Amino acid sequence: MLKSYEDYDLEYPNSSSLSIRILHYTAAQHITGKCGLAFHLIGQASLIAQSLSLNSEQPIIRDDPIESQLLRLTFWHLYLSDKASACLKTRPMVFHQPSYKGSLNIQPSGEPFIPLLDSSKSSYRNSFEERLLVGFHMVASLWSSAASLVVGMGTYEATEDDRQPFVNRLTSLYYDFIAIMDGLPPWLKISSLIATPEEDGVEAFQKTSFWVQRCTLAMTFHCLRLDILQECIEKGFLEIIGLDDQPLRVAMKKAEWIQDFIETMEDVPFIYHQIKGEPSVERIRFVGTILLEMIQNINNEAIKARVDSYFRRLLDTLTKLNSKASEELKG
Image (cartoon, rainbow, N blue to C red; front, side, top):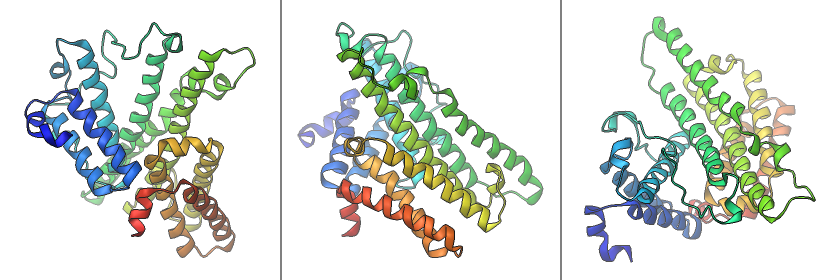
């Protein structure tokens, strides 16, 4: 269907132009596992967003406030996806600061806030949509913060005399990253998500939605912490996370953080991973590659046995998910 009017759509894009390609991208990943096709679709959406200069507030403003809000939130979705790809190295980063027409100065949700959900429905009461967006932007902040750190480590080409100021900047970025989870709002904390006999259907619906967001935040945080550790090992910047180059200490810390990831993965309902689809599989697969590397290279038998048990648990979950993209990679 898109092919029938694609030329016109590219000449006169709007929020639907972006949304259609994002939906096609998701379908290509989830249903067919065609990563190359998915890469092309999300790349095209990102380029359209760049052509519309959606990284700035002024170009987003439209006569129709709904269209403005759709453009805003779609941009943030693409931005999040782009930073995730930069961290996991699945595709080149598009929304890199030098490529912007100006700086990134778009508001998270816009002022005044324009709801996209029907606020007259009881399911969306108590500022439900605004709260959802807080969680959404926390996820985006995790990816963006981690990407700044991971990409930043790769830019070091200075002399030894310049290393300490560079390390100090990276350390500051790392603390910014881990501090994001300190700002978890009350409605995303476990104590607020426990079901009670007194709650009605609306409260149950909203708690389920917030629980999904909490799962996403936890899975993302633990995955990115491991990603940062891997980059620190490869680029020689272990001091920014409080480690040195002593192999046993590094292996113990890596095993500890892998345990955090796997426990989080197993704590969340399995249906969460099924609904999230390839993004969840991608994180699990990423941690799996770290485990395989450790199994092959670790000499300490105690750590090796621990890591081997983690790998079996992770592989069990990955097998149950029956990922189409994983099948494509095998092929």
